[in-house]
Amino acid sequence: MIVKREGTGWSRKTFLISLTAAVFGALYLANDTFIMHRVIVYRDSFTAVSVYLVFGAWVGLICMLIYNSLFGKWIDNDYPGFNFGTRKMQTFALISGAIAAGSTAFCLMGNQSLDPSLVTALSNLSIIYLVGYDSLRRNISFKNIVVPMSLVVLGSALASITKISGGFEITLAGILILLIGRCGTDAVEKIVRQQGVWKSDAITFNFWRFLWLAVFGTIFSLLVAFARGSINELLTLFLQIWKSALPWILLTMFFVFFFSTLLQKAMKTGAISKVTMVVNFQIALGIPLTLLLNQIAPGVFGNISQETAVWVVRSVGALMIVFGIYYLRNKKSS
Image (tube, rainbow, N blue to C red; front, side):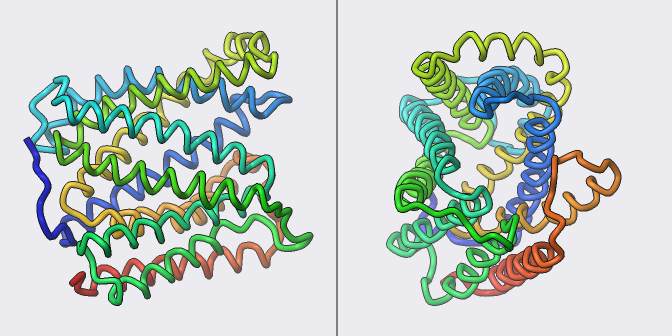
């Protein structure tokens, strides 16, 4: 059994694991975007998202079982094979899965009130909460983390910009939903997830967390569909797209498996705020990945911005993330 290590901080191995997780994160986000723009398309975006959440979650759960047996021991030597873990681990997995489903709900609610690029930018402010947590736990030195934190948070915001002309659509309700709801729940979920990994291993906890995420995500999607009177549309859309979507969802879940398990592997020995900052490299990596794939297959991600200024700003943001991570890698944590 894995137990909490006092003085959780940083190491070269933890840094490399976090960076590798970021690469898989960028790949799965790119495939996610493709699915939502080209595979699961519907006039009501909420119905399309709900179909993807439910279908993807249960396909993903089956994939996790298969990948656990193939790669589990290779990723985490502490993985003993399929098991139910301890009662404490299951409690953390349930809480983490439930919070993750709630965090997704807050993100969807925020999307209704704010510009999408602003949603992404504000969502990254959860890093500030995590830095506060690690500082209070003395896992990090705040004075040594404030510079890379500022670079990564601001860089993530700039790298998420999708338009400059026309400004942003901002409402107080949307801001509060994201800052308190999305960012708060995301930070708490990561803290709970780290506790769960300490009580078992990266592979076991990942499976059970994913199961509870699937359960709560399905319940949430169905309840909303019933409330909106769109349950028939949801079922009809599922029957229309499941065959064409399945191969792409399988590819996404391959990337998700490595992203999630490597992230949780890093959480075992790394301060959660530092791990999260390094994993934000996926945002920087997503920029050249988007441009490259759109050049190969125009329109693969829908209509991306044609404003030169947008890509200049996003590139500056990506460089800030890289500099922040480089600074973090070379700065003593305490």
